[in-house]
Amino acid sequence: MSKSKQKGSGASKLPKRRLGQLQTPAKPSRRELSGAKTHRTRFSDQWQSYRSHHRQVAGESLRRLLKRPLATLMTTLVIAIAMVLPAGLYVGLNNVEAVSQGWDGAARLSVFLKFSVSDQDAQKLRQQLADRKDIASTEYISPSEALEEFRRRSGFGDVLDQLDSNPLPGVLVLSPTADNSSPEKIEALHDQLNALPQADLVKLDMEWLQRLNRITDISRRLTLALAAMLAAGVLLIVGNTIKLAIENRRDEILVVKLVGGTNAFVRRPFLYMGFWYGLFGGLLAWLLLASSLLWLSGPVKELAGLYNSSFSLLGLGVLDSLIMWASAAGLGLLGALLVVGRELRAIEPK
Amino acid sequence: MIQFEQVCKRYPGGHQALNNLSFHMPHGDMRFLTGHSGAGKSTLLKLIMVMERANSGQVLVDGRNVSKLPARHIPELRRKVGVVFQNHQLLFDRSVFDNVALPLVIAGYGHRDIGRRVRAALDKVGLLDKERQNPITLSGGEQQRVGIARAVVNKPKLLLADEPTGNLDPQLSAEIMHLFEQFNQVGVTVLIATHDLSLIARMPYKLLSLRQGQLVSAGGSHE
Image (cartoon, rainbow over all chains, first blue to last red; front, side):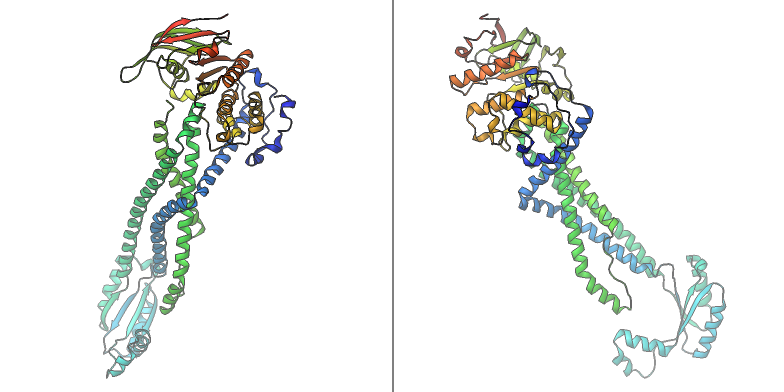
């Protein structure tokens, strides 16, 4: 175009959102419109323009969503709720595991002594056992200490006062050394201790831990299954929303296809839309989860305090949060991808 | 530029829109496609744009057989062909500038190029001062000119128009036709479907007259 035609219509008159892209170093072509020659765009220009087009489309789909805040919020909320459930379970399981971590491998054997065994005999036995190579630590809890502890912890002190004698036996608490902690070795130790004349009953404090671990394993799998189902739900929600959006922009799609828009070009805004929905859903889910955890953390700390534990609730770490957002955005994108191809093929200019 | 060889087009349902049609239109030519409605004018244009495909025969556009063109190459073809529709096919959710810019955005032009070319095209059709307006605020004639600007902004070799003056009064119609003539004078091949015989009677261009899918006169020329 000639300079004279450009007069008064320079860059300053460009629509506002284009100003950001003015740095595009496209070499001005001197060809006249009247030249009627097809213009070949250079590859670097095309790449530049492709990228700026992506930026523009991403921004435009975002603006479209924000233009209808209520509808967008509804869809986002549905996605968020679908994501909060498995994410919440995941965090819960992490916490259960963190709690049981301190106990893991630390199998303890409680040797309940016969009532006939005196404190001195018990101490002697403790010394003997402590000398064994397969035992790492020993502790003797005398009947009176046990009673004191029970009184303190159970809150049944008044009931205990009614009793004539102490109903609790003395206990030797043993932990095996690390190399002797395998189930078979502990089993062997258990049998040996059971054979001691002073021992009334030997209890292995590990079974419940194993059970707990199995239960957490099962819960983990259930969480995964639930997550998979809800992910499918998210795909459907996003897919359906995108389908409606495509229907709403049917005219535009027809015109774009008529003037030579490729399928990729037509698809792009809807893919971005899916991406945004997913990302917003993920962020909202994260927010819901974080606030729930915050809300729970006080009471959990108090509960842990009652168990003399300094445990505090684990939240979502940085990595987990990033994974959550990325998978949410990915799900949105995938949901859009699943619908867009089929829907757009059906819209052809006739 | 456009060559039809024994083209037949039958729509599902049995309507024979084009029947063994052959003609050749060289580069730089300007012709009118006439005939009653239902004679196959729109079908002919749709075959060139690959909005429809021929049942038999060949359609060559710029030396390329488009009747068997794979779907992924269709956009490339459509970018080389400018089309003006009777109902304009403008988008009312954006400005005149953005409507005209659409083919350039699609083709991946740099931003500066787009600004210059859109303004050049709008200048050509006399709407440079309306670039920021929404096309819905424009008159019918102006809307049609926006449609023309969009069709030529990509500097196509071939310009098709389907009843471009269908809804316009004679004065505006003549102006629109004059615009097409100007494009033709700079080398664009122009094919205009119209049934407005009184309008084109005074113009010195060849006619392609269709009746029931067949050519009745190729060259009812006034030359």
